[in-house]
Image 1: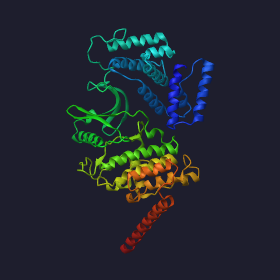
Image 2 (image 1 turned 45 degrees about the vertical axis):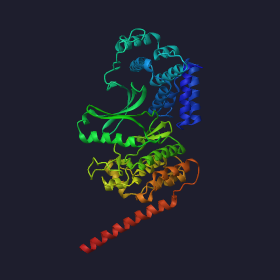
Image 3 (image 1 turned 45 degrees about the horizontal axis):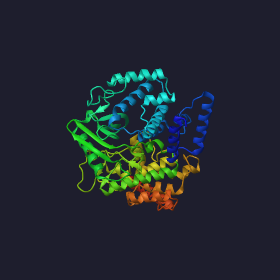
Image 4 (image 1 turned 90 degrees about the horizontal axis):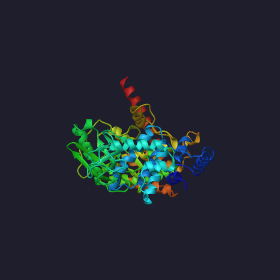
Length: 484
């Protein structure tokens, strides 16, 4: 078997397992790849073809390839220097335009397969073996990298027992974390994919921004996230491995989940798969609620695919404990907390006041609505406009968009029922708990009847909204008459 086919096979299997591409779409790209091999003598990576055909997003393809590469490459104590060398060789070849990112990630997968089979080749050797880069270019790149890392021509480090220097400025943090890439940013921290030289594993490293280290509120908020996540032990909540808050070190070490976020694939996944992912997230949310913790920022960017036991809920940066000794609120009472598109009405109305656990269910309705319709249920040009829309309008059911051809996909009646129940304006009218929401999503996935009452919930919400408008008009007329 030609070596890149190993990577393409693993990549295709992962796409099909996650429901990110249909078999017929995959077959079309494989046919294109075969035609290129016959006409030009070499085949482009499958990931590159799928991205070019707009079957998979660039970010999703890169994330999956990186996950596959890390899952196969085992880095032991004697492999650290080789891993640094491989990273630098790949970075230099990419910067020089000698190889595309998809081919590079595919060759890393091949390298991992060969290592697991007992053939410990470096990345440069794998690239030369497959003819991915010219030999002269590889030799020159390897020579420069080994010179920068203080390695001999054979790759051995001069001076046994010396600590590894950083591959480049900023790559080595606190003397033990080598940063791979930036995964995302929050309100007060940055998250990186990193390699822990002590634990010898790939991790997610959350670092407090340097400019906020002198802010007591920011440091306390960072420490509170570590405390709250450490209280929750559930396969669908990101696991905290270690935390350090104090002095000049502020970091949160978490398990690395290599898949894309739900934000990257929400409008592309089939409804069954989205419901399955949200069910996992609801189970993780239920575990947080059992510990008396409100997440307060559930959104697709904070739901990661690719965990060992399904989707994983992450980022408790603004979470708050509401029982067992409440944490102090680090925001003002009139400050609205959360992402505007996914706020529940009570989060806007009550600000920093005590919120019910049902406020964390509302974002599930927004995510399902986005998945089925393609837009959020409460549109607006800005955050304040969307908040006004949230407080004054009732969203039209997705089936109404489908009736006029405005929906992004066919609207399953049962999924619409779950969506509209989560979007109820009164928290008491939503599910009694996150477990109940997860159970109903599970019923939909299994093809069973869901507990949400579709017509009843929609009609009740609209009736209440209409009654509020009539009552408001009556009060306005009364005030006008009494004032004349």
